[in-house]
Amino acid sequence: MKIIAVTNIKGGVGKTTTAVNLAFLSAAAGFATVLWDLDPQGAATYILRAEAGEGATAKKLVAGKRELPELLVPSSYERLDVIPAHFSYRNFDVHLSTRKRPTERLLRMSGPLSEKYDALFLDCPPGISLLSENVLRAADAVVVPMLPTPLSVRMLSQLNEFIGDQGWTDIAVLPFFSMVDRRKGLHQTVIASTREQYPSILGSEIKYASEIERMTLRRAPLPAYAPKSAEGQAYSALWDEIVARIGMRVRSDEPVGVDDSVAPFMIS
Image 1 (cartoon, rainbow, N blue to C red):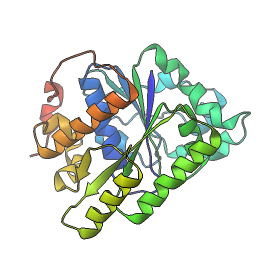
Image 2 (tube, rainbow, N blue to C red):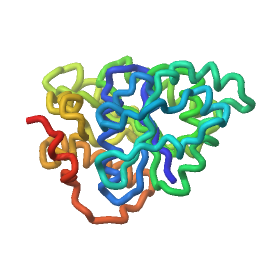
Image 3 (cartoon, rainbow, N blue to C red):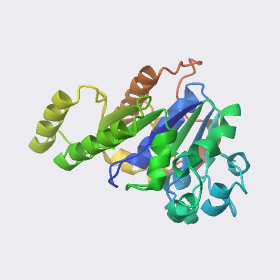
Image 4 (cartoon, helix red, strand yellow):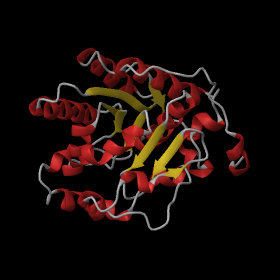
């Protein structure tokens, strides 16, 4: 099972929409996929209509009193399940800090999922914390949406430095530019200079678009209801790049499309 974290120190960079769309595309490509919404605000949970009942608190999960397979909620899409967010996740750091080897706890918690799933996506809250250290320790790949601004470039430098200091050489760091508006001179300048400084940045770019913002209105992954749109094609290209970088093999040629079971929920 590949663990793919979608994270950024900053909020408001398109992290949740990226996690939801990539998880959908992974499932549509034939991979048994689960998305774990680690953000207490629960935006990914909301978009995928996966709200659970009582759920499990961060305290119970960290203590081993509840297991992740118990919390799985099926989405409306074949091969895509969700572990919904819980408001107690805002205290994840507090409970992780009480455990031995606290940075390895999330990796151990996710272990049982590997029996059923090919890919685990982690939608992470913004910030630097013990939880984010856990995410980096567990992840095979870290997908980093970046705004085309100097502060985002600084963040990428800090992230690379932190991972290097920890000696985690087996993590694939996969940054890409999000919410791009090439009408802005600053965006053009930052993208050009950053690509020169970091040649490994993914070539795919996600433009700023109202269609992406409408995901929260439709409550569905964008490639599910608009696969042939420019935005849907951009996310598909991004997913293809990630698959190539981390060595996942697509096991199905099934086309990405709308699942009939969710069509009635769509808002025109």
